[in-house]
Image (cartoon, rainbow, N blue to C red; front, side):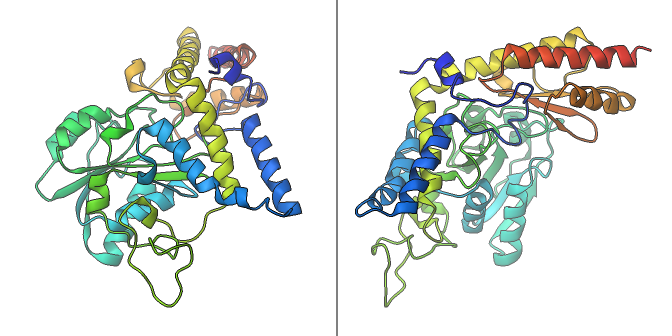
Length: 374
């Protein structure tokens, strides 16, 4: 068992980095795994390539340990958007979703609707960007076969209540884009029917990593429209015929994935499972509270959730419109890396966020307060 402090030492980003909602700097174990497999591929020593074929089983086992889905319900994906495309192109009926969330699900839904005509988007009106069981309940209709949402909204930092939403939607499919919470939010993914995520953010496994997990109900109701030669039960390379797709998650792949990417993702997830999502979530929550406390101290409005049950690793700061540029400049001048948008600043922490980083945030907030009080 790895302690949370030992886990935090696996990361070596520069002090001041608070942009994990955009990209997570790689874990040491991920870098080591990549280097080891690149060396294997470089030399191609007799018998060494067998280890590449083992990475598919390994990555499905690693995802299963973190999500609670069975290994046969999981298939590797190179990114979140492709996993959502697989799901939406196979759904028949109405899909209730918000146009205000990150657009991957919206694009997949509209593209599927335009191409096949078997899916119809129903646009959800949110509660100031937050999707709650109540807002969904008020907008459900018999035409809706599935509800799609982000586990954590990329703009507001709001953590969705998967259990409450499951109770509200009943037997409808629940499709979750988990990327902004996967690896740091301690949730039960089994309330969802489809969970899709990449590994480049909070998991810190780099680009080209991700997964699609599907419940048995989802496998029954979603057609594998984009299914390639390795998505059948006829062996690795069926020749002379085109067999039907597998009746399972493995059908939702187009070609062979990168085993090196699978190894990177596996290594990161194995370490997360070893330390435990609860410990990670608690450390992240503590660091979020530290950022919120600093914002309060210097009078910077926080618009993301304060309730620990409604947040993961994102803090959203929204100063007055005429003060936003000054805040962004102050953060930049103190080497604090965040995401700035038209009206706000998104600060995203991790277990590796240090006291030195928090001191840099304090200094930047102090400079901002001094400049705006003149």
